[in-house]
Image 1 (spheres, one colour):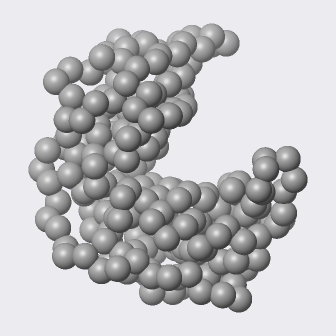
Image 2: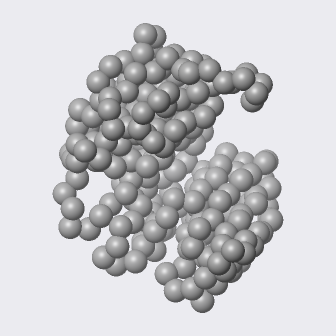
Length: 243
C-alpha cells in the first residue's frame, strides 16, 4: 500500500508485487492528503482537512482495494497518523496552543467506497497510564497521542511529543523524540497497546543537533537515521526488548 500526503490525484495505491501499482477504490473530499497503515482487520487510511478546522476522517479496507468511510469513528481533530497495535488503535494529532480545532467527530469528508470493511470488536475501556510525561516544548505545536478500542471513541494518553517518529517493533510501538536542546539525548518510549507508555532505564540514543529522523524495523531489530549536521546523516542500529 502507498498513500499521498498531498490532496488531489489518487490518494491510495495498491500493488501485489511492488512493481505495478493500481488506484484503490476510495472516495475522499477535497483538501485531504492521506496516510495509510495496517490494523487488525486490514488497512486504515486517515486524513485531515485543514480548510475545515482540522476535521479528520478515516477509511478502512479489508484488502487495500475497496474502502469505506468510517462515519462511526469520532476522531480527534488534526490527526496526522493512525495505525493498529494488536487489537487496538493508536493515533497522533497535531495540537497548536491557542488555536481552537474542529470538535472530535466533525463531518470532514463526503463520499464512501462501495463495500464495507468489518468493524473492530469492542473492548473494555482502559484508563490512561501516568507513566509518560510531555516532552514537547512549551508554546510550540506538539503531537498528542490517542488510544481507541474500536475507533468509535478516542481518549488521550499521557504521551505528548514534539515530532511523530515511530515504528512498530515486535508488536510494540517505539517512539523517539528529538531533544529540545541539541546537546541532550533523544527521548524514547514504548507501548504494547498504545495506551500505557514506558521509558527505558536510560536514553541511549544521542546525536546532538539532529532534528529529523526516520525509523524502520524488522522483528525486534530497529534502524534509526537522523541529521547529525547539515548534509550529514547519522544512523543507529539496535534491538527493542520487552520492558
